[in-house]
Image: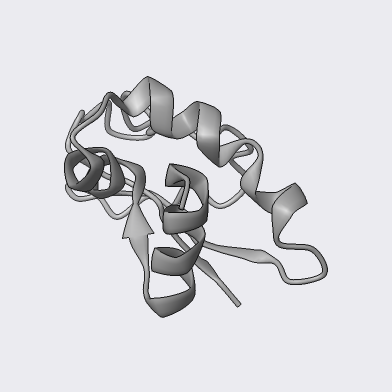
Length: 90
């Protein structure tokens, strides 16, 4: 089974952030992001559900973010204390 297939299975069973997936597979975040770009095409007609990233300091929610990677800092309070987005397949 390929890493992408394993990621898809993990996302079907629960919610994961990209950092947790990278740690699980003992690889770089960059490689997980490359795999992640292909997953929506592989799971059609199902969809990838996203729990958006948010600032732990002020609570700002990154709702309209289209990038896969974690935001570097909050646009409101400039804090770098960001909880990354979590993904699952629904």
